[in-house]
Length: 132
View 1 (cartoon, rainbow, N blue to C red):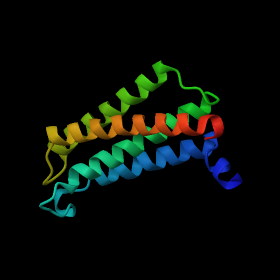
View 2: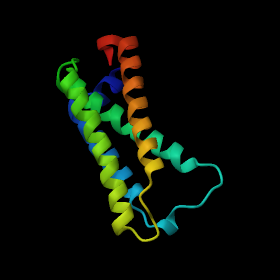
View 3: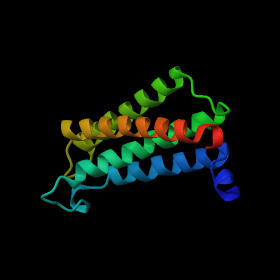
């Protein structure tokens, strides 16, 4: 259990959240040729998963920094920042990335992922209490 507690320390979580944010930014900003086309909307599943992870990590960072407390104003700020991040990514895709375009459905998938991430964070936190 000690390695997990060490991983969940505030400094490690911040590094993990920043690294994850950078990696998904790179993934979202790859040129269109790099993204293989599929029949199933796997793209939307990826948007949901990545944004859920983004929300969970940043909620966890603030939760740990606030000594296992998470004021509603912090939650609101994090979730709004995540939504704004998704909007910025879509605008950049539309205007600056070759063979990519901004998509309202991607924005909805991003928002669904952020909401899912918040729900999962609270479910896990309520289950484990202050042990996380």
